Image (cartoon, rainbow over all chains, first blue to last red; front, side):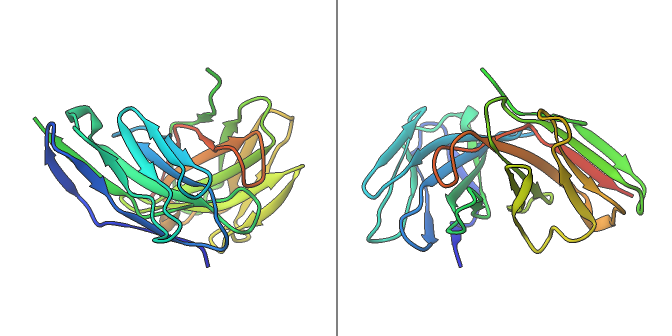
Length: 113
Length: 115
């Protein structure tokens, strides 16, 4: 079945460091891919998305490229800030055609000043 | 900016009690969802709802759970007889286009604590 695997956290970085959070997926066809962010005590917010192979989603300095050949959608940011501390979830639309999102297990990012 | 709103933000209940969690999706959205997140764990799909009926449900969504869209604006999740393991954050989500296009908009969540 469809699934999403993210790198284990927590990831602890110093401010201005480069961030990569790995995400790989298993799915039928070529589903839309998403990164959601959950700040402490808050709900899920869409960070970025990509709907087809080689698309690059970007927002707030974060980027991720839909790689069909490696079934990956890794999240990157060139220079993280303390305010980026949050839990990041990679997700895809399931193949059941109901709009169901399937989430990875989440990766906690902690950025220290 | 339109948003999905959920009430209550936090509910504490005794095991065996019925709980209703309420959601007001974005007004022109047609597809509705409930997810849950047990503390520190992944976000899990519970149920999807379209055209006044369930379109998909997970194995978590057993006979103790039900959903309803009673009045064209609210979307509710009822747990008939709560168990300790139902303690979680419950998120409502909606989307306008579908089924596998567009994006889901999530509410802030309702935290359920079962004692």
